[in-house]
Length: 219
Image 1 (cartoon, one colour):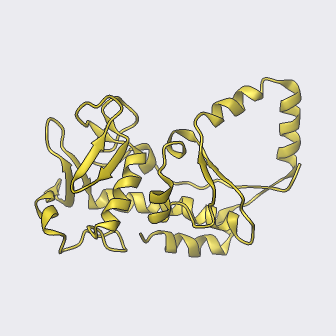
Image 2 (cartoon, one colour):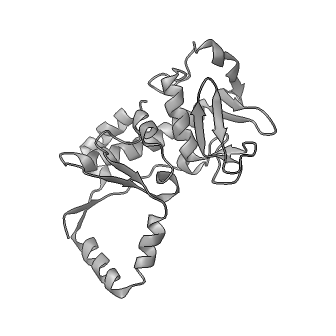
């Protein structure tokens, strides 16, 4: 097999919807995509009223907030936002927040939510930047419940994915497929060989990771 580099970084629990005001795992009422065309459109799997926000939708939200200058480059809510959005900036649980939906459930993004999301996405951005350095990347494959649902242009816009991540493919179920392959003794043996030849990068020992992490905290 060819040369293989591996790493893992703690991205926190924000991408699991934990610790965020409207954060949610995947449910029929969770917002999985957010679009903007004169107004915000929150999409749920069932089409029912939003009950919470999934990680994939938070990526959309950050990209839209950046594009509409609702947030500055540091992720802080702007004092002056377009007139159409002034009524959406409110205080929620003592924090400056942007209200996306008011109904049976209040769907809002708080300043503390933004802070947690910036730390999470910066960890991914930094590790990917280090892995890609000085390499000619031909394809980038994202998987898992988050990776399979990402809108690539939004992920790059907010510095979740570095620009070196090219030809991005989002594929569902690869971890499960990989695990099922391990039931085959021959494939398992090949996997052991791959593991033995892999180079593991400890990002805590890579100076550039810290530099990229600071860069990745910006939008």
